[in-house]
Image 1 (tube, rainbow over the protein chains, first blue to last red):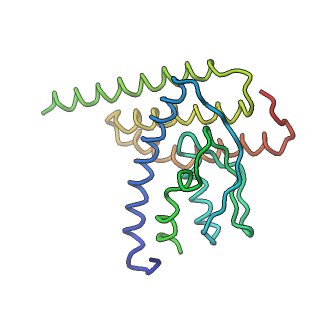
Image 2 (tube, rainbow over the protein chains, first blue to last red):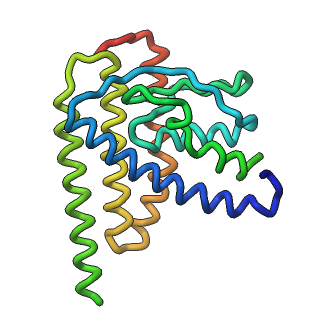
Amino acid sequence: MGSNISRPFYAIAYIFALLYFIAMSALNVVYLSLKGTIQPEVKVIDTILKKEISQTFLANSITLTPGTLTIDVDNKAKKLTVSILTPRDQSAIIPFEKYIKGMFE
Amino acid sequence: MNTDITIITAIIFFVSGALLLVASFALLRFQKIPHMLYARLHILGVVDAACILLLVFLGKPIIALVAVLYFILTPVAVHSIAKSHYDGGAGDDY
């Protein structure tokens, strides 16, 4: 992970993963809205990404996915403040972290 | 062949319209819950996804380019609203 040759493949995989997660979580938000059990909360999560550009990509991906939304990014402490529609694990909030790590770091 | 494309486009337009309808219903449905503004921004994410789908499948390349632009501009706008709400001391206002 992280060699120069594998970066374009990670970029392509990232695009497809992003589109897949956008579609899935849009359907999930629609289901939750119809069911009526939403419970928004603000949560601080850790990230393994170090560079600013990769953290920016991660924050933008989180915001593009319906149901999760980035409020703040702390570059030095490697922490993201996110708002989530229903309580869920950290791995369910940032499933694309490994693609971004392979793409930039 | 041409008819197939028309049918697929029609199905996609129907799905997008249904998503928009449910999202606009959900926007008005949830009132007086904590973090109302974040919940509404989440629901507007569904509107974003439906509009991206519409723009891509409208069949004009220049409009599909607008959809690509959408991927960059939407997070910035949503992030600005959420951050200003978070920092502005509005707390749990609706």
